[in-house]
Image (cartoon, rainbow, N blue to C red; front, side):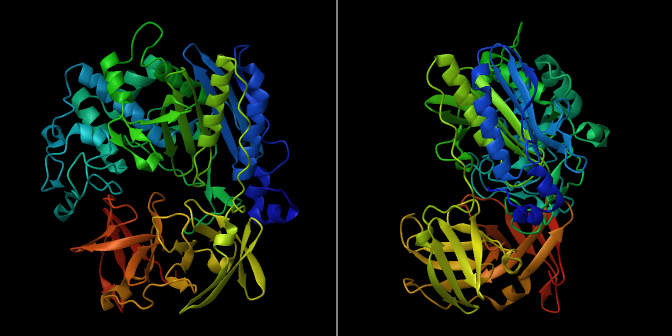
Length: 569
């Protein structure tokens, strides 16, 4: 984005600090005179472009191949308030990349004859309550996110009514499931005899040489973490240049995401994967176990088109080569790991803020540069900037949309899009998926603005409708029904609900076109006493509405997590 005095003021003190000139220049901790030094300036230029564009505070990055950790470099601020640069010895929380650590430990137990991957999980953990009419759920199903169980709640439910309810037969569909990876951490503890932190330290960290990293995130390591940030307003969509606030400290002790690591240590982990599980003088696990880890078991569309999933790692392709990759999102860190195991090169990057994205572009470009250098071919061009205000097909959305709440007028100006409201031209920004936009105005900041097409299955079909929260609008090309009904009791469910656990946060329920929606983007579908989230036909998560007082629901439960109504929210 273009840095101006106006948007410096808009972002507040932390946003302004992140945009300071020169702050994103590289600081190398390790940069041996190896085979890759020629492209480091190009990589640094891209990282600077990327961090400015994403309004990130700072980043740590490591490059490694089968032979060595080649480069450890930091960019930006580890402490925005004190204007302190990121240090190479600071810990970054790697989030769900921890799942690969847990998977490797379980595969070691498989090598030792202590774990049968095809055995039902309840054989090992008989206290686990599962309500299913399908085949038993195996350890393999947990490792591949194919259990058919919800994954947003706590695995320990105090209410017998809340046994984990299977939505479909295990093994049929991929649905990302954090709760079941916490369960896998307990499985490893049960079979090994050591609790997860000690187990991971002894089985993974020490053999790999990750001596500066920690297998569990508690207050004991808080002083070693890079200071970290989260959106100042965490109950609504976040614009890229939005204001940041220091994040609350959160313990993480389960298998879904418990590791905090330095970049250099993550380079050693990348090197081990690039070597197919081999260490300098031994193996971390057998060749057969590594193949189980790294081979695809199920299509995983959540990781992108064509992606599949192994055991705790996504399996993909990059420029024809096999790629193992995973991302990690914590309350205040975002990370990306990629290893090209055909070329034997890889990288890890982590940003000390939760802003809704992972630094995949940086890691991908680093790997492409490394591979080009090794193959003595021209280096790839630096990826183009991707400012969110640029909308290549802006003209698709232009026009007037009418609805019960009034009229929306949307104007295109080249590749920019604006909402015209009371004499103002309010800029729109792309927000995640296609046809979703953030409206840069306080009156419209609680929901994204969605556009709908005549044929939702055809990306190029005409735009015929728009929605913001519970408000629905259509243009003259819309040909469907214009009035909808819904059960009267649903009116009580509309509102803002919150849990102060930052993993749960805020959710808003609206009614639009005769159905309930979560945050205006995820449709709900009645299933007995529950409502299923139907943004994905295989989503296993659910909502249940609680007591109604004076025509307002006071509490909801989402896959086991309770949220309470926010008055005037």
